[in-house]
Length: 590
Image (cartoon, rainbow, N blue to C red):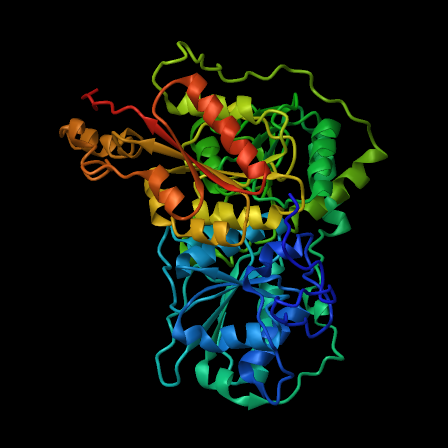
């Protein structure tokens, strides 16, 4: 996906009619595996050596030394100091200012980027942003996604209250303290359990002059990976428990995107002959076509296990409750988490205490590696050959038949088969079991993001030979539609499939049980959920942002053809939106 029309580096020859381009202060080109031309749409001109340094200069210089690639931010006067320092001090390279049209969209893009890389991206916020359940900040917290949030406040203004969805909210007093706070923040954000950290900065400190930073310090040492390995004794005891188990079960939850960690989980499962469950709300953790994989959810599948090994499972307390109170009170539950002490439970994260039999506070990837080393000398792999029951594949029926959610999922699986695709986001109730995931970047989790997160993931995937796909509901798409402008502006290739449920049945599914429980008319569940009268032209909106818009009203064949066309456009570096309009269906009283 190479682009043309721009310089390949800071020292490239310029034409006479081309404006003078700002050099990188350290003489290097944009650091990631991306084409520099892609971002030259915002190259500053005629940059002079700084006569004085200001607090905001020190902040962005710290971001560069920490190798933060982007700062996502919207245009706002409270962020003016950041804009000036990024552009006129650093030349808008490393970090690059990523222009957004909304604070929450900027945060969601940073979240999507970090979900791929495992490293924090910065987002500068003009406001404190939404801290409600369902916000980008809450998703980042729940998904253990590292974020560095910079929020300037005027002198004398009350700083935003601490949020339960932040690991910490640091509030330095001046520019020198801000540098130290950012070093602390990046370490907190990227040490497991990862999460968002905010640095609230006083605007006066950003505007005041300051001294040259001490560049002799290697700030990368502040991003050093924390070794959260378990004690050798704990590893040996756990290995004995697992090897003695007759029906072990592994619950693979919010683990890393590491290729090594992925391979090690396969090795461990094969050594133990253990079945493996994953969680659709978390990113891919185990190959779904492996004989030992038994499903995306563990409900009803843990009752026969005699030992359950939880690797950062998001709702182990719920699993334990169902087993201990209903069907399997004798199962040995082993919980492995970097946060067994529940330091993150302040946000009501669903992380209530779990009646586990063995608690090991360690990084799941590190522990799995240690277990393999401990077991290899004892036994070899004895992988179970038990066949796995796959969900019934829906049949397309007539080529002109009405579309449904299962058929949309089937069409995506058919068209994208053989392509290196990353499913960046999907609706919470989406049937992901119809898709096959064979690597840690194939799926980043359902129900925790929209188009902005997909754009952020697509940004991180540039140069990796992968296609970023986002499947979103119409209301989520419309709420974050301004992310399209950022994607088109910076030529970030991404494919968005909008499930346009014109009858509101998809969302009303959650509404019907409430009415039924109250003995009221469930046929009214669509009210407040249907997007109609007037209908919204999603294709037209996409095209107004400069993206390619395709609308599909019915027909499996037409849908596959539309997806093929959109796929080619994305492979050519474009932004494509496929508006899949599901037929209106009247909700009948069950």
